[in-house]
Length: 409
Image (tube, rainbow, N blue to C red; front, side, top):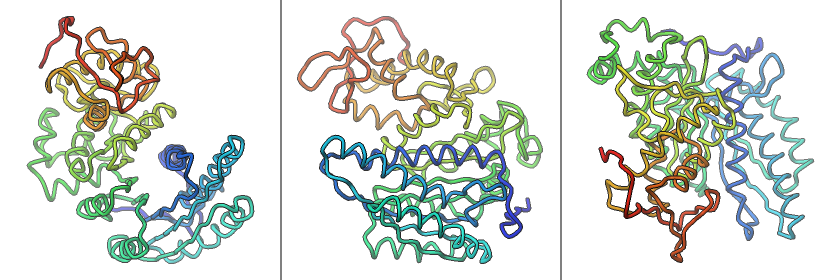
């Protein structure tokens, strides 16, 4: 497959898949900042954003690209947080952000500098507590990544967000993703690619994995026409999702293998990597807030990819119908999960176990705990939780002594 680069000089067109991806990115990054600025005693947050394929920052229609989105969200969210803190009598918080912007095209970088200038000036004017230092780089990401990591390490950045929005798949190696995720505890990656590029990579480098994942579709590894381009069958989406998860799942503790939703066929994947269950928890909730922006095919409860593709599997669009399906499955899945380890699990341990297994919303998981006839949630003082929104990480999930019938396996 020949990958087509954006024509930034003549004005790049904002495709629908990019519009959907930017909406998720904007809202997740907003929540990321609110969580990281949520401590009452905090007065400073220091972190870095690395946009490895930044482009020129603005599309032909005038819509902002990811570099401008990051700055806009930093400005608006910090102002919102500080207005609330002032009303509550808390000290204002400031942000120190190193924004590293790289692109392989020199012309794109020069345009990006022009497009960023007024946005950065507005941020300085309207948000004096926001301090952004911008570094512009020009080169292939794989070649320039060691320089980026050296800067982050030398300057002691413990919190980093990477946005790796490549045209295909081969511009960022899996080993590099793993190195990024292992470089520090608080690091996250947004990773965009075309599924056909990953399939081409696996067809060349891991034919056994590809053959195993496609066996139930009765397709040979050499006959992938149905999976190239925009896939139109839900079963093909499920196959691609399994391939993505198995290929990328070892790169981080929490990997979301969900595609960008397209009713005419799935083609682009927008994957989130995180080391913390909390990041995946927030990401799941953002997808539900933006129903139908991404898609999952499989189980809506736990073990989302453990299903028999010949006779089961559901298209999950993070909408109200999907949420009801998730609640129904979670009512059975959660007692089964608890019973495999005994009769009780701490809520923190429970979260760490499930958030790479489910697309479910936090509220639906909590409802399945409180409403479940086989489970009780115990506070650290020995009392019973009665409300789903009161559950916290210090609680314990415990099976009741007398339970209704459910299959353990």
